[in-house]
Image (tube, rainbow, N blue to C red; front, side, top):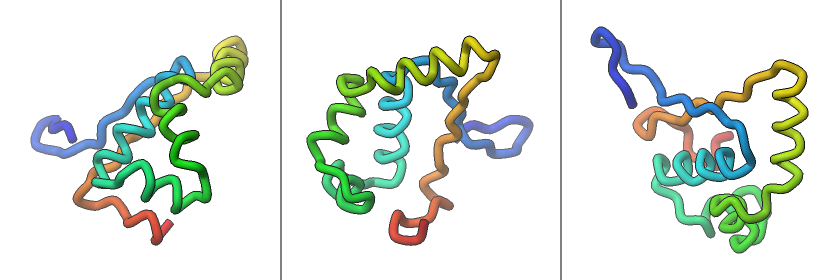
Length: 92
């Protein structure tokens, strides 16, 4: 988390590619101290698929979608959670 004039703010990441989004997933997962298996189980995904997303391997559709959004003038930003205040995955 970052501090600006004494005010704590969550970290934001601009997402331009599927790999960027995968990196954001990994960072958010680490912020909550979750394993890939725990996160994958909580959303009914196979752990290996989640690993591929985090590594930027299975992101072709995400890349295309983000490219379309950029072409339309949209910007995608991910706000990463504060581990101290983020809900447990079962609470979302």
